Image 1 (spheres, rainbow, N blue to C red):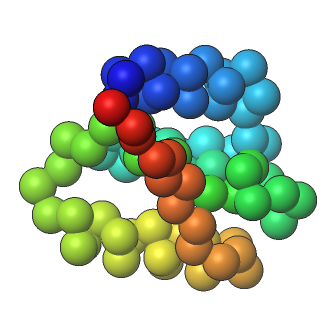
Image 2 (image 1 turned 180 degrees about the vertical axis):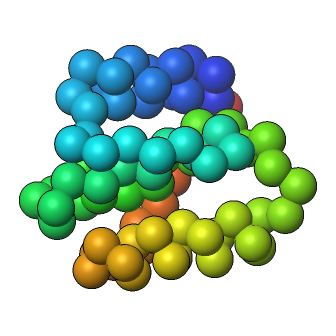
Image 3 (image 1 turned 90 degrees about the vertical axis):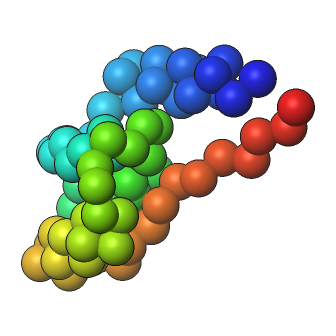
Length: 79
């Protein structure tokens, strides 16, 4: 179920992309000038980094420099 939800999230993200996209260790950082929470949030599909705390700080810096709140789009998985 988790893989299916991740796949659907990835398809949705690709079909309606944010204006600006940054990649950070498997996370998709989306920035679209504060229009919607979806387009201004992190989609953590996969994580390939080694220090999640440092990567969260990096995300905070990115959104702060764009005058946006930090939002992680985290789905509920039911199995």
